[in-house]
Length: 174
Ligand SMILES: CC(C)(COP(=O)(O)OP(=O)(O)OC[C@H]1O[C@@H](n2cnc3c(N)ncnc32)[C@H](O)[C@@H]1OP(=O)(O)O)[C@@H](O)C(=O)NCCC(=O)NCCS
Image (cartoon, rainbow, N blue to C red; front, side, top):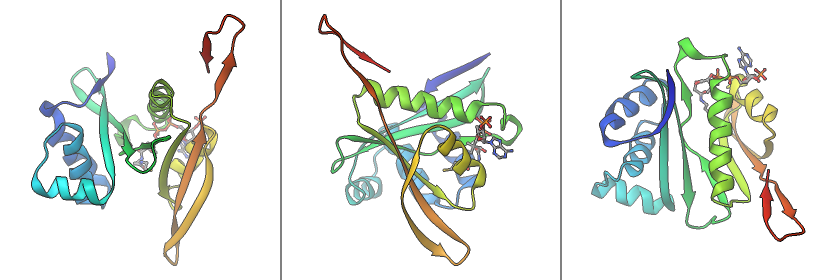
């Protein structure tokens, strides 16, 4: 059975290991995951302050007790209107089955519940699959910079739409 659960201390080391096996930003992974389970060391605290991170939460997509996907979100002190997508990963065996889309839609729903106006994220231009996924889900490119002659970091944002107030004064959201 599939389920999405908030990351707890029980799975945080495994989560870090999975993410670090794929992504190169080893310490950023550790700090953001640690923040999301309130495991704050002196180093984590310094990194958190430096990067203006207000809060961070990660979610795990389980198939029974196996971790098949990870996604998270974080808020920055200087951008109260935005929610950023944190580490996002689907285990290779489970890719191209719609789980990535499901997790981004899941974070979009959270951003709306938090009444944010935009959902933001960044990725590498060489990650064709992720770029396509974000564009398909309504994200638009708003900033990019080259970090290597062959690829760039691309920043995407999605404006979150909220329906206007109804006649009886209740607010319906999309
Ligand atoms: C990026 C990633 C999370 C996508 O997860 P996924 O479960 O495979 O994605 P989905 O099956 O939901 O596919 C969603 C969309 O991705 C794109 N996509 C999926 N498989 C694809 C493929 N083989 N080639 C190109 N695009 C593909 C399509 O746009 C697809 O939408 P569609 O089904 O409407 O065509 C996954 O590939 C992954 O974990 N990659 C490694 C980590 C990573 O790159 N994370 C993102 C860093 S920013």
